[in-house]
Image (cartoon, rainbow, N blue to C red; front, side, top):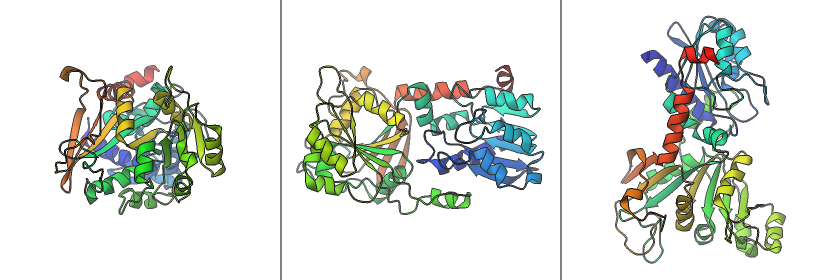
Length: 406
C-alpha cells in the first residue's frame, strides 16, 4: 500500500470526525482531493441532511483543480438518492483521474455499486486503504446496518480496586481533570448519553458537553457550513417505573439547557407519571419488559435508540445499569479510567455479570492504554464487537477487481 495513500486517507478520516454527533443515521465521511502531491480540496459530511463529503469538496473547490486529481474518501460514494443527490455521478462529472476509498458502504443498497459505477465511468479505483480505521470510526453505522441497534460505549471511572465511590458514597472526583475533559469531548461527539435512575437521582448530572478545548472546533470552523460546537447529545434516563415523574425537583432539573431528555420506562409505569413528564416537555419511551420481568428491556431500548437515529451512545452509569448491559452482552466498547487510589468498600462498578470462571471472562480486544494526568485510560472493543468491526473492514475493503465484479 502506497505510503502517500495512507497519509491522505488518514486526513480524510480525520475530516470525517468533524461530523461526529450530527450525521447519524448517515455515516461519518471525509474527503480529500490531491493533485501533483498537493491537497487542493477538503470535504466532510457535517450533519444529516447536508451535503455529503464528496459533494461539499466539489462545490467548494475550483473545478480546474479537480480535473485529473485523486480523490480520497473514507467511504464508498453513494449511488442512491436520499435527502441529497447521489455522490458517484458528481465524482464522475468532476473529472477526477483516480478514486481511493477506505471501505465499501455497509448499506446493502450501496455496497460495491458506487465503486462499480466509478469504474464503468473510466476512473481508476482502489479500495481498502485504512479499512480497519474506517470501520472503527463508523462502528455505529455498521451496527445499524448489521444489528439494527445502537452502538453502546460504557464509560467507567474507578479506583485501582474497582470502586466507583468511597464507603460513605462520595465519588467526586475519583478521576482527574484531564480524564473529565476527555469525557466532555466524548459527549460532544456522541448522539446520546445513557444513565440509570439511581445515578440520575443521586448525582443530578447535567449530562451536557462542556469541553474546554475540543480539537474538532478548529476543524469544523474551517469546513464550510460547520455549525458551532459543542454538540449537545440527547440524555436518556432508564427508569422502569418513571418515578422521576413523581418528583418536582427532578422534573425541574430536566428543564435546564442541553440536549433533549428522554425517560425510558417499562410498560408498568403509572400513566400519571408519564403525563407529568410529557407535560414538562420530556419524552417518554415505553419499552416492554422482558418476559416475566418488570424492568426495561435493554435490547429493545438499543433498537429504539437506533430507530430514532441515535446510534452512538455513551453509557455513564451507574453500577446497576452497567452490570445489566454487560450481562445482556450489549456493551460494545469500554472506556475505563483507573485512578491511582484505593477505596475499598462495597461500591464496585460491576456486580454479577454472569461470569462464573476466569475462562468465561470477556477480554477487550487489542486494548489501548493512555495516560491522562494521573489516570490511565483503558480503551477497547468487547470480543463480539471487535469481530464485527473486523468483519466489516474485511468485507468493505476489497480490492479493485472485486469492486468491478459487483
